[in-house]
Amino acid sequence: TKELAYGERLKESIETTFSFPQMEDAGGVLRDWEYIKFYHVPLAALVTEISTIESNVKRVETEVMTDIMSNFEAKSYKFTNLDAMVIPESSYILRGDSFRAKVFLGAYDKNNQPSIYRNTDPLSPTDTTVFEKSEDAVKLDLDENGFGMLTIPTNSMGVGKYKWNGIIEYNGPEGIVEVPYTTPAFDVATPSLVVSPTKMNVFYRGLPNPIEVSVPGIAQEQLRVSCPGHNLTKGSDGWVINPGKGKEAVISVSATMPDGSSQNMGKKDFRVKRIPDPVPKFAGKKPSDNTVKAAEMKIAAGVRADMEAFDFDVKVTVKSFSMVFIRDGQVIEKSSNSNRVTDEMKANMQKVRKGQKIYVEKIMVKMPDGTTRQLANISLKVT
Image (cartoon, rainbow, N blue to C red; front, side, top):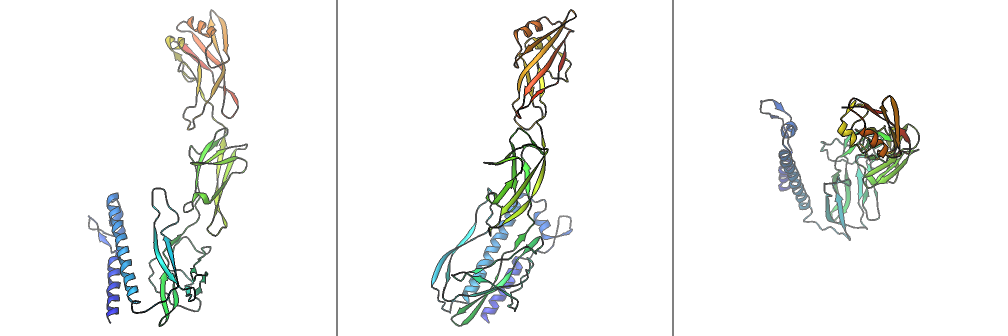
Protein backbone atom coordinates (compact mmCIF):
# COMPACT_ATOMS: atom_id res chain seq x y z
CA THR A 1 0.00 0.00 0.00
CA LYS A 2 0.91 3.66 -0.24
CA GLU A 3 1.44 3.98 3.52
CA LEU A 4 3.71 0.92 3.68
CA ALA A 5 5.77 2.14 0.72
CA TYR A 6 6.26 5.52 2.38
CA GLY A 7 7.21 3.83 5.63
CA GLU A 8 9.85 1.73 3.88
CA ARG A 9 11.25 4.83 2.19
CA LEU A 10 11.34 6.65 5.53
CA LYS A 11 13.12 3.73 7.19
CA GLU A 12 15.65 3.55 4.35
CA SER A 13 16.23 7.32 4.58
CA ILE A 14 16.90 7.12 8.32
CA GLU A 15 19.27 4.16 7.97
CA THR A 16 21.18 5.93 5.19
CA THR A 17 21.37 9.24 7.06
CA PHE A 18 22.72 7.66 10.21
CA SER A 19 25.05 5.11 8.65
CA PHE A 20 28.62 5.59 9.86
CA PRO A 21 30.80 3.03 8.01
CA GLN A 22 34.57 2.71 8.31
CA MET A 23 36.62 4.95 6.00
CA GLU A 24 40.19 5.06 4.71
CA ASP A 25 42.54 7.72 6.07
CA ALA A 26 45.16 9.59 4.02
CA GLY A 27 47.48 6.59 4.27
CA GLY A 28 44.88 4.16 3.02
CA VAL A 29 44.33 2.57 6.46
CA LEU A 30 40.75 1.59 7.26
CA ARG A 31 39.57 3.59 10.28
CA ASP A 32 36.36 4.00 12.26
CA TRP A 33 34.13 6.84 11.14
CA GLU A 34 34.60 8.82 14.37
CA TYR A 35 38.41 8.56 14.04
CA ILE A 36 38.33 10.07 10.54
CA LYS A 37 35.87 12.80 11.46
CA PHE A 38 37.16 13.85 14.89
CA TYR A 39 40.76 12.74 15.58
CA HIS A 40 43.20 15.67 15.23
CA VAL A 41 40.58 17.66 13.33
CA PRO A 42 40.45 21.49 13.75
CA LEU A 43 37.71 22.79 16.04
CA ALA A 44 35.94 24.63 13.21
CA ALA A 45 35.58 21.40 11.24
CA LEU A 46 34.30 19.56 14.33
CA VAL A 47 31.61 22.19 14.89
CA THR A 48 30.53 21.90 11.24
CA GLU A 49 30.33 18.09 11.46
CA ILE A 50 28.30 18.18 14.69
CA SER A 51 25.99 20.85 13.24
CA THR A 52 25.35 18.59 10.23
CA ILE A 53 24.41 15.69 12.54
CA GLU A 54 22.08 17.96 14.54
CA SER A 55 20.45 19.15 11.32
CA ASN A 56 19.92 15.56 10.15
CA VAL A 57 18.33 14.62 13.48
CA LYS A 58 15.89 17.52 13.28
CA ARG A 59 15.03 16.72 9.65
CA VAL A 60 14.33 13.06 10.42
CA GLU A 61 12.30 14.06 13.46
CA THR A 62 10.10 16.23 11.24
CA GLU A 63 9.65 13.42 8.72
CA VAL A 64 8.67 10.92 11.42
CA MET A 65 6.20 13.31 13.04
CA THR A 66 4.69 14.04 9.63
CA ASP A 67 4.28 10.30 9.03
CA ILE A 68 2.66 9.78 12.44
CA MET A 69 0.27 12.69 12.02
CA SER A 70 -0.74 11.51 8.56
CA ASN A 71 -2.14 8.35 10.15
CA PHE A 72 -4.53 10.43 12.25
CA GLU A 73 -5.77 12.88 9.61
CA ALA A 74 -8.91 10.93 8.78
CA LYS A 75 -9.84 10.32 12.40
CA SER A 76 -11.42 12.64 14.92
CA TYR A 77 -9.93 12.66 18.43
CA LYS A 78 -11.67 14.42 21.29
CA PHE A 79 -9.59 16.34 23.82
CA THR A 80 -10.90 18.51 26.65
CA ASN A 81 -7.74 20.18 27.89
CA LEU A 82 -4.75 22.01 26.46
CA ASP A 83 -1.48 22.56 28.30
CA ALA A 84 1.80 24.23 27.46
CA MET A 85 4.52 21.58 27.57
CA VAL A 86 8.21 22.35 28.10
CA ILE A 87 10.76 19.57 27.63
CA PRO A 88 14.32 20.72 28.40
CA GLU A 89 17.31 19.13 26.70
CA SER A 90 19.08 19.22 30.06
CA SER A 91 18.41 20.57 33.52
CA TYR A 92 22.13 21.06 34.18
CA ILE A 93 23.69 23.84 32.11
CA LEU A 94 27.35 24.82 32.06
CA ARG A 95 28.08 28.54 32.19
CA GLY A 96 28.60 29.78 28.65
CA ASP A 97 26.17 27.23 27.22
CA SER A 98 22.46 27.87 26.64
CA PHE A 99 19.30 26.43 28.18
CA ARG A 100 17.40 24.67 25.39
CA ALA A 101 13.90 23.23 25.52
CA LYS A 102 11.02 22.22 23.27
CA VAL A 103 7.84 24.19 23.98
CA PHE A 104 4.60 22.92 22.45
CA LEU A 105 0.89 22.60 23.03
CA GLY A 106 -0.27 19.30 24.51
CA ALA A 107 -3.88 18.08 24.35
CA TYR A 108 -5.47 15.52 26.67
CA ASP A 109 -8.81 14.37 28.03
CA LYS A 110 -9.14 13.99 31.80
CA ASN A 111 -12.10 11.68 31.25
CA ASN A 112 -10.26 9.40 28.84
CA GLN A 113 -6.94 8.67 30.49
CA PRO A 114 -4.45 6.41 28.74
CA SER A 115 -2.65 3.34 30.02
CA ILE A 116 1.12 3.70 29.84
CA TYR A 117 3.64 0.87 30.10
CA ARG A 118 7.41 0.49 30.04
CA ASN A 119 9.63 -2.53 29.63
CA THR A 120 11.30 -4.14 32.64
CA ASP A 121 14.85 -4.14 31.25
CA PRO A 122 16.80 -1.32 29.62
CA LEU A 123 17.82 -1.25 25.98
CA SER A 124 21.29 -0.62 24.70
CA PRO A 125 21.69 2.93 23.32
CA THR A 126 21.73 1.59 19.74
CA ASP A 127 18.79 -0.83 20.13
CA THR A 128 15.82 0.18 17.94
CA THR A 129 13.53 -2.65 19.06
CA VAL A 130 9.87 -1.62 19.22
CA PHE A 131 8.20 -2.29 22.57
CA GLU A 132 5.96 -5.35 22.72
CA LYS A 133 3.59 -5.45 25.65
CA SER A 134 4.04 -8.48 27.90
CA GLU A 135 2.70 -9.68 31.24
CA ASP A 136 5.71 -8.32 33.11
CA ALA A 137 5.46 -4.84 31.55
CA VAL A 138 5.48 -2.09 34.18
CA LYS A 139 2.36 0.07 34.22
CA LEU A 140 3.05 3.71 35.03
CA ASP A 141 1.13 5.67 37.63
CA LEU A 142 -0.85 8.61 36.23
CA ASP A 143 -1.39 12.02 37.76
CA GLU A 144 -4.80 13.71 37.78
CA ASN A 145 -4.35 14.86 34.18
CA GLY A 146 -3.40 11.44 32.87
CA PHE A 147 0.31 12.17 32.60
CA GLY A 148 2.45 9.07 33.09
CA MET A 149 5.01 9.35 35.90
CA LEU A 150 8.10 7.55 34.61
CA THR A 151 10.58 6.78 37.40
CA ILE A 152 13.51 4.44 36.78
CA PRO A 153 15.70 3.67 39.84
CA THR A 154 19.40 3.32 39.02
CA ASN A 155 20.55 1.62 42.25
CA SER A 156 21.12 -1.76 40.57
CA MET A 157 22.54 -0.35 37.33
CA GLY A 158 26.20 -0.28 36.46
CA VAL A 159 27.92 2.77 35.08
CA GLY A 160 26.95 3.30 31.45
CA LYS A 161 24.35 4.56 29.01
CA TYR A 162 20.73 3.33 29.09
CA LYS A 163 17.34 3.93 27.54
CA TRP A 164 13.85 2.48 27.98
CA ASN A 165 10.92 2.03 25.68
CA GLY A 166 7.24 1.49 26.21
CA ILE A 167 3.78 2.08 24.81
CA ILE A 168 0.81 4.37 25.38
CA GLU A 169 -2.67 2.89 24.98
CA TYR A 170 -5.47 5.34 24.30
CA ASN A 171 -9.19 4.97 23.54
CA GLY A 172 -9.47 6.43 20.06
CA PRO A 173 -12.51 6.90 17.82
CA GLU A 174 -12.00 3.45 16.29
CA GLY A 175 -10.81 1.54 19.37
CA ILE A 176 -7.55 1.24 21.27
CA VAL A 177 -4.68 3.23 19.73
CA GLU A 178 -1.14 2.13 20.60
CA VAL A 179 1.66 4.69 20.38
CA PRO A 180 5.18 3.39 21.15
CA TYR A 181 7.76 5.62 22.81
CA THR A 182 11.45 5.46 23.64
CA THR A 183 13.20 7.53 26.27
CA PRO A 184 16.30 9.52 25.35
CA ALA A 185 19.49 7.67 26.25
CA PHE A 186 20.89 8.74 29.60
CA ASP A 187 24.13 8.15 31.45
CA VAL A 188 24.39 6.50 34.84
CA ALA A 189 27.59 7.53 36.58
CA THR A 190 29.15 7.07 39.99
CA PRO A 191 29.14 10.38 41.90
CA SER A 192 32.51 12.02 41.34
CA LEU A 193 33.47 14.51 44.01
CA VAL A 194 35.93 17.24 43.06
CA VAL A 195 37.39 19.34 45.88
CA SER A 196 40.18 21.62 44.71
CA PRO A 197 42.11 24.08 46.85
CA THR A 198 42.47 27.10 44.60
CA LYS A 199 45.89 27.97 46.03
CA MET A 200 47.76 24.71 46.73
CA ASN A 201 47.56 21.17 48.12
CA VAL A 202 47.32 22.06 51.81
CA PHE A 203 45.39 24.39 54.07
CA TYR A 204 47.34 26.99 56.06
CA ARG A 205 46.28 27.84 59.57
CA GLY A 206 45.58 31.53 60.07
CA LEU A 207 44.66 32.18 56.44
CA PRO A 208 41.36 32.08 54.51
CA ASN A 209 41.97 29.13 52.17
CA PRO A 210 39.69 29.25 49.09
CA ILE A 211 38.48 25.93 47.68
CA GLU A 212 36.22 24.86 44.83
CA VAL A 213 33.75 22.03 45.41
CA SER A 214 31.85 20.39 42.56
CA VAL A 215 30.15 17.13 41.63
CA PRO A 216 29.71 16.60 37.86
CA GLY A 217 26.03 16.67 36.95
CA ILE A 218 24.87 18.30 40.19
CA ALA A 219 24.23 22.02 40.57
CA GLN A 220 26.07 23.97 43.27
CA GLU A 221 22.89 24.86 45.16
CA GLN A 222 22.20 21.15 45.70
CA LEU A 223 25.53 20.52 47.46
CA ARG A 224 26.01 20.43 51.23
CA VAL A 225 29.65 20.86 52.29
CA SER A 226 31.10 20.41 55.78
CA CYS A 227 34.50 20.24 57.46
CA PRO A 228 34.22 19.22 61.14
CA GLY A 229 36.61 21.03 63.47
CA HIS A 230 37.28 23.86 61.03
CA ASN A 231 35.51 27.06 60.01
CA LEU A 232 33.99 26.62 56.53
CA THR A 233 31.99 29.42 54.87
CA LYS A 234 30.37 29.87 51.45
CA GLY A 235 31.72 32.73 49.37
CA SER A 236 30.68 34.27 46.06
CA ASP A 237 33.29 32.27 44.11
CA GLY A 238 33.37 29.05 46.12
CA TRP A 239 34.14 28.07 49.69
CA VAL A 240 36.63 29.42 52.22
CA ILE A 241 38.11 27.36 55.05
CA ASN A 242 39.91 28.77 58.07
CA PRO A 243 41.59 25.75 59.69
CA GLY A 244 41.32 25.18 63.42
CA LYS A 245 43.49 22.84 65.47
CA GLY A 246 44.84 19.57 64.19
CA LYS A 247 47.00 18.51 61.27
CA GLU A 248 44.22 17.30 58.95
CA ALA A 249 40.97 18.62 57.50
CA VAL A 250 38.31 16.40 55.92
CA ILE A 251 35.90 17.95 53.42
CA SER A 252 32.62 15.97 53.26
CA VAL A 253 30.01 16.59 50.58
CA SER A 254 26.42 15.42 50.19
CA ALA A 255 23.81 16.40 47.60
CA THR A 256 20.07 16.89 47.65
CA MET A 257 18.63 14.64 44.93
CA PRO A 258 15.56 15.49 42.79
CA ASP A 259 13.32 13.36 45.04
CA GLY A 260 14.43 15.33 48.10
CA SER A 261 16.69 12.63 49.52
CA SER A 262 20.29 13.27 50.55
CA GLN A 263 23.10 11.27 48.94
CA ASN A 264 26.69 11.11 50.15
CA MET A 265 29.07 12.28 47.42
CA GLY A 266 32.28 11.41 49.24
CA LYS A 267 35.03 13.14 51.18
CA LYS A 268 38.59 14.32 50.68
CA ASP A 269 41.46 14.69 53.14
CA PHE A 270 43.81 17.67 53.30
CA ARG A 271 46.83 18.47 55.44
CA VAL A 272 46.87 21.52 57.69
CA LYS A 273 50.18 23.36 58.08
CA ARG A 274 51.40 26.53 59.71
CA ILE A 275 52.40 29.42 57.48
CA PRO A 276 56.09 29.03 56.55
CA ASP A 277 58.63 31.52 57.85
CA PRO A 278 59.16 34.60 55.70
CA VAL A 279 62.61 35.56 54.42
CA PRO A 280 64.17 38.60 56.17
CA LYS A 281 65.95 41.17 54.02
CA PHE A 282 68.25 44.11 54.77
CA ALA A 283 69.54 46.35 52.00
CA GLY A 284 68.05 43.82 49.59
CA LYS A 285 70.18 41.02 51.09
CA LYS A 286 68.91 37.87 52.82
CA PRO A 287 70.51 35.23 55.12
CA SER A 288 71.93 33.31 52.15
CA ASP A 289 73.90 36.37 50.98
CA ASN A 290 77.41 37.15 52.25
CA THR A 291 78.31 40.65 51.06
CA VAL A 292 76.79 44.10 50.67
CA LYS A 293 78.13 47.23 49.00
CA ALA A 294 78.86 50.10 51.36
CA ALA A 295 76.63 52.44 49.38
CA GLU A 296 73.70 49.99 49.58
CA MET A 297 74.15 49.50 53.31
CA LYS A 298 74.26 53.23 54.11
CA ILE A 299 70.92 53.95 52.40
CA ALA A 300 69.10 50.91 53.82
CA ALA A 301 65.87 52.07 55.51
CA GLY A 302 65.15 48.98 57.57
CA VAL A 303 64.28 45.28 57.61
CA ARG A 304 61.50 43.64 55.64
CA ALA A 305 60.14 40.07 55.62
CA ASP A 306 58.92 38.56 52.35
CA MET A 307 56.91 35.38 51.72
CA GLU A 308 58.89 34.00 48.80
CA ALA A 309 57.32 31.34 46.51
CA PHE A 310 54.08 31.46 48.52
CA ASP A 311 50.77 31.58 46.67
CA PHE A 312 48.88 33.56 49.29
CA ASP A 313 49.03 37.32 49.65
CA VAL A 314 50.32 37.43 53.22
CA LYS A 315 51.17 40.55 55.21
CA VAL A 316 54.01 40.09 57.70
CA THR A 317 54.88 42.83 60.20
CA VAL A 318 58.46 43.26 61.44
CA LYS A 319 58.13 44.14 65.13
CA SER A 320 61.80 44.61 66.09
CA PHE A 321 65.41 43.78 65.23
CA SER A 322 68.98 44.48 66.32
CA MET A 323 72.18 45.47 64.49
CA VAL A 324 75.62 44.48 65.73
CA PHE A 325 78.82 46.33 64.76
CA ILE A 326 82.40 45.39 65.71
CA ARG A 327 84.75 48.35 65.86
CA ASP A 328 88.22 48.37 67.40
CA GLY A 329 87.48 45.02 69.00
CA GLN A 330 84.35 46.36 70.68
CA VAL A 331 80.88 44.85 70.10
CA ILE A 332 78.23 47.53 69.59
CA GLU A 333 74.57 46.43 69.53
CA LYS A 334 71.71 48.76 68.66
CA SER A 335 68.01 47.84 68.74
CA SER A 336 64.89 49.02 66.91
CA ASN A 337 61.31 48.46 68.05
CA SER A 338 60.00 48.64 64.48
CA ASN A 339 61.11 47.66 61.00
CA ARG A 340 63.02 50.94 60.56
CA VAL A 341 66.69 51.62 61.32
CA THR A 342 67.20 54.07 64.19
CA ASP A 343 69.38 57.20 64.13
CA GLU A 344 71.97 55.34 66.25
CA MET A 345 72.04 52.54 63.71
CA LYS A 346 72.50 55.03 60.87
CA ALA A 347 75.38 56.73 62.70
CA ASN A 348 77.16 53.40 63.22
CA MET A 349 76.60 52.33 59.60
CA GLN A 350 78.34 55.49 58.41
CA LYS A 351 81.45 54.45 60.36
CA VAL A 352 81.66 50.93 58.89
CA ARG A 353 84.66 50.49 56.62
CA LYS A 354 85.10 48.09 53.72
CA GLY A 355 86.09 44.62 54.86
CA GLN A 356 84.20 44.91 58.13
CA LYS A 357 81.03 42.95 58.91
CA ILE A 358 77.59 43.97 60.08
CA TYR A 359 75.05 41.64 61.71
CA VAL A 360 71.25 41.94 61.60
CA GLU A 361 69.86 39.77 64.40
CA LYS A 362 66.86 39.12 66.67
CA ILE A 363 64.43 39.83 63.81
CA MET A 364 60.94 39.42 65.31
CA VAL A 365 57.85 39.31 63.07
CA LYS A 366 54.09 39.10 63.65
CA MET A 367 52.40 36.46 61.45
CA PRO A 368 48.78 36.41 60.18
CA ASP A 369 48.07 33.36 62.38
CA GLY A 370 48.78 35.51 65.45
CA THR A 371 52.19 34.01 66.27
CA THR A 372 55.40 35.97 66.79
CA ARG A 373 58.49 34.38 65.27
CA GLN A 374 62.21 35.06 65.28
CA LEU A 375 63.75 34.84 61.82
CA ALA A 376 67.23 33.86 60.68
CA ASN A 377 70.13 36.28 61.18
CA ILE A 378 71.78 38.18 58.34
CA SER A 379 75.59 38.46 58.31
CA LEU A 380 77.16 40.69 55.64
CA LYS A 381 80.72 41.74 54.77
CA VAL A 382 80.88 45.31 53.49
CA THR A 383 82.62 45.66 50.10
